[in-house]
Image (cartoon, rainbow, N blue to C red; front, side, top):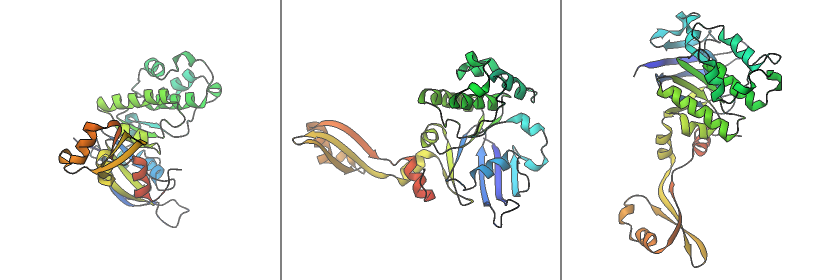
Length: 286
């Protein structure tokens, strides 16, 4: 598997800042994976995304895109990428369809607009002005916009923020299908459910540095506790016991509880991505 992006010692400083926002980060995004960049506000996530999408070019370090120096690429780069920013940007006085046709006109490669809008539940609303769309409708239209050119790489920022669970599931299913077809996704989000359900690997961005680049599953094992919590119905109501996971199959007390008690729940000591986020970044999700 080749790398879609290879980033080496990336540094960036905004003109009015005294210090670098990105302080020499290095990582890669593999072709055909969903890579999540997580971190508190102001950590450098958006700056990283803007550099990788060529919105900021005065960076130091090296970035290659499928083996080519990112600096050497011209407008052909934008034929390859789709971008969905956190705040949807549309022309409010135009209809949803008029917006999509306008943005689609920028690209040589055209996606199936009708299929995309039907999939996110907007086809029947295509002739309504975007000014009259709800927040969730604008978010879904923003995703359609990112997919208009059948991109090779998809950049998504808080892609399901503001969506109800049903529509969030539709978007996540479409992202998973895109990845299964060979697409590459660079995702930034504060929604840890999205991370667990979508990402192959994640990295935590903290004060311009990167930490713990790994698969969510591996992080949950690393930061979790090797134990099982068993809740069962006892004489005085629900009772709880915790057992070490090592040699659990030979733990006589645990096996006796399974055989003799009315079990209500069993949980491993696996920690949540929210807890890992707080541990690694030292920050709250709020």
